[in-house]
Structure formats: C-alpha cells, structure tokens
Length: 152
Image (cartoon, helix red, strand yellow):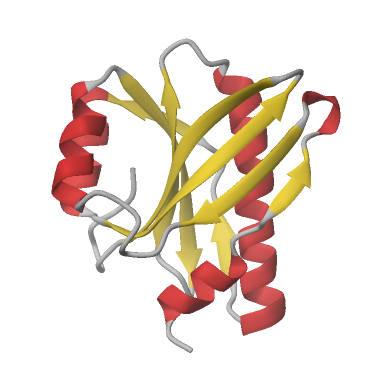
C-alpha cells in the first residue's frame, strides 16, 4: 500500500465532538472534485485562514483545515487536534509509521497562498460539523512536502 492510500485509510470517519455535536470526515476521489487549479483559485479568492498541523517523522507534510471567515479558531483548532491525532494514531497502529504532529498554527493571506502553490494536496477532503441543526462544511488537505520545503 502506498503512502497516499495509507493516509486515506487513516483518516478518521466520524466522532462526537464533546458537547459541540458530531464531526464527519470524508476524503474525495479524483472524480468528485474540481481540478486543483480551479479549486485553489476559488479558495484564494475568498477571505480564508487555515489551521496548519505539521507532520514530521516518517511522513513529512502537513494537514490544513480551511476555515471560513467568522468561525471560532479555537473551537476548530480543537476539532483539528482530534482529526490529526486520530490520523497519526492510525498511521502508527495500522501502518507502523512513526509520525509527529505540531501544535496548530493559523496561516492566512500570502502565507497560505504560498503554501498551496508549493505543495498541492495529496489528499483533499471535507469535514462536516453538525450541531443544533446547523452544519458547517470545512475543507481539509493533506500535503506532502519535499525535502527542505518546510511547512506552513
């Protein structure tokens, strides 16, 4: 199984987000989304920020969770901690890969644009957060960085 398949296999599916509702994570197959260039232009044309979790060890890259303007960063940083921790735990348990994660960093503007330009996502997915009849849709990307490229 290649690294992309191992990452896809390791994404968490659904979980209860404390008293804040439920979260569902789904990857997308290559037929179900816009081309990367089209999606990237759309993402960068809006006022967005992203939570960035660096991956180091046997997997080098980062997980980005894109936030719409107005969302509470601390709430979604905690949700991202759960998503990324479960991803790493599954990589270690099921694929015997040693991976470390960083604390989340918020990136936006030029920095987000530069990261997305240099590191197209290996995996694109969606996160759906449902609470009290409302649903918030977020984008999640896993990027793999080449040696020396750094992370967001």
